[in-house]
Image (cartoon, rainbow, N blue to C red; front, side, top):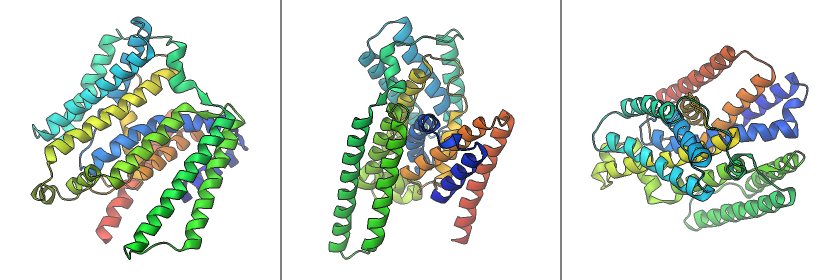
Length: 362
């Protein structure tokens, strides 16, 4: 996947005569990635559990529109707007999960109904008009930046913690007699990671600094990684997606776990909705249109199997970066919208075909 990212970036850098790698465009690209990436972090757990959520685009639009209404029409303080929006996201996700887990309605049908209903509610509550402009406080969520020195300090601390965690994990595996990577190779990968992170921060500081939505994406990605790799709840999700009957026989409460997965997904959709409305400075009746397809495509491109049981948070976020890179690059080249849809559809089809072919060979 890293090779695909390099190829895409080199192609657009060449065709845009270097403009693609400008500090301003990289900042815009990462802000684009943030929304799709956050949706993908939630979606990947839904797909790992062998379910699907087609409602996230409409739900994001509805929650972003609700946040704009709270902020613009009702004049609520920002903390209250955020808290109520997050609570609504949690409840809407749990609503989907209840129908799937306890009423045994296929997730495709439940979330397809949600996609239509949430969009209808959004149009109804906004009266079909754009709710704007949001307050400067609201704009901080999606339009603010971390100053240069603070960005470097945070990057160095994060890298130090990441490297320390990797070495601690290596020593733990060695004590258990498990296989560990060669020391030289691990040092090389960590050095490359540090150079990429600090280089990205340096480039972003040439514009305005590290965008706040990117920080939120990184924090949520790390939380998702921890949940997937270090918690019993994460292991239950993989077990359910891998073999639901075996998971049930092993004592896992399948219904409660599935409902929780959808609720968490709704919470992340609410965060994405807040960022979207803040970035646009408005709540729009058309906001989030087909965003669910970008989120699903990001997960599949990142190696998540639609059959369930297989997938990773990091892969989903990298898939989101690939989708955003394609959108950004094609827009810079003034590629017609219909061609953009065709290219993204072809890439999704190719990713699913490769996943299917790999399983058949296995």
